[in-house]
Amino acid sequence: MCGRFVNNVAIDVQAERWRAIARVAAWRPTHNAAPTQNHPIVVQDRVGRTLELATWGWVRDFSGSTLLVNARGEETHAKSTFRDALSHRRCVVPATAFYEWTEPAHGRVPWAFALRDRAPFAIAGLWEDAGGQRSFLLLTVPANAVVSPVHHRMACIVPSAHTDAWLDPATPMPEVRTLLAPYPEAPMEAWRVSTRVNAVANDAPGLLTPVPDTTGRQQSLFMP
Image 1 (tube, rainbow, N blue to C red):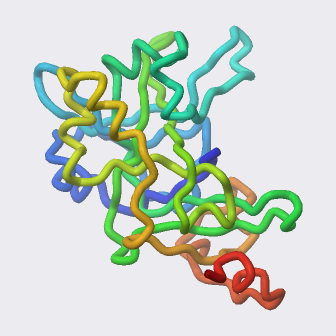
Image 2 (image 1 turned 60 degrees about the vertical axis):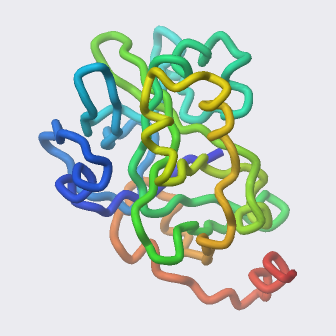
Image 3 (image 1 turned 90 degrees about the horizontal axis):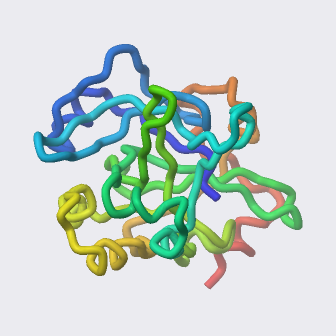
């Protein structure tokens, strides 16, 4: 799953990047975005494209204790929970990196994943309105060669050339489904980060600082 991400870009830069009208009041860039928090998403309807805040996680019981923060992108068309949103309520979630952790056998070590040029990118998402609150979840796909040594799933990054198609409600479903694919590995890189990322309360630029791997695990994970 993708349970944390980074969005350290100012709202006006995000709005320009995705050609959206910003409707964001109070929000600050984050280096450790987590479920239940409010974060910017880009949505599009007949009127136009907007950048607005939404809560990360779809609530799925009356107590509010069950959250859906991710969905497997390649399965959403076949599941009633997501089918309508996939057809009519797609969004992108601006990010500059996301985190994944090694499987328990590797000691739950956090890793950051980003584009080599550190440019912002769009994570595919779905949104809904429930109880007067707009919320979103992130879509995941099978991991590419950069992410797979750490985790078998990765955030579904929508290539810049296909963002318009993903956001447009009129895009035919067969085309939408082709966009739910692993991002090419060549423009991406990964590095180990501090376990301070594990605590949601920690949110500072230093979380992205590479941590030396004294165990040799990095070499074994990413050795060709």
